Length: 173
Image 1 (cartoon, rainbow, N blue to C red):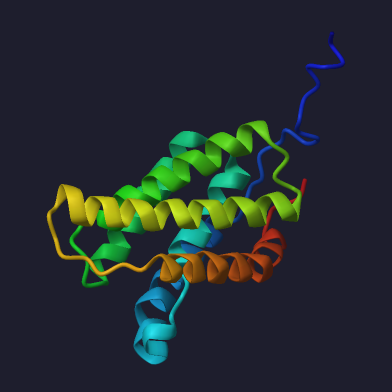
Image 2: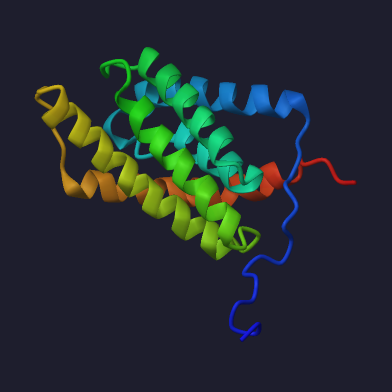
């Protein structure tokens, strides 16, 4: 029986990063998220604050820290965008919590798992933004399913490039 209950994680250690990485990486993601859609227009199919939230939540493996990171990133993103304050905060809070909770149980060193997690959490975040905007706030929110799909694909491609770069910032013992 103990063979069937094997631990799914190879390395249960929590990754650590320099304090500047915790400040500058989210700040850069928020600035780019506010600036790039003005340049790219309707072709801005990405959510950099979500990608950064998922990365740190997966690697820190703490649901509380993932929740707080998602809430802060979402609220700042709302403050810099045309959305109602709190819409992205709710979506990124849930995504950060789920990413950290899954990071506790699954080997997040595998890039395929990271990619799939990022894709699914991007879709979930888009659905939560629509749900909160339309049903809870009663706002007219234009949404097409293919836009959410393209955003999830864009986030996954960005994560494919960004995650190995952020891995190099970690503190090694």
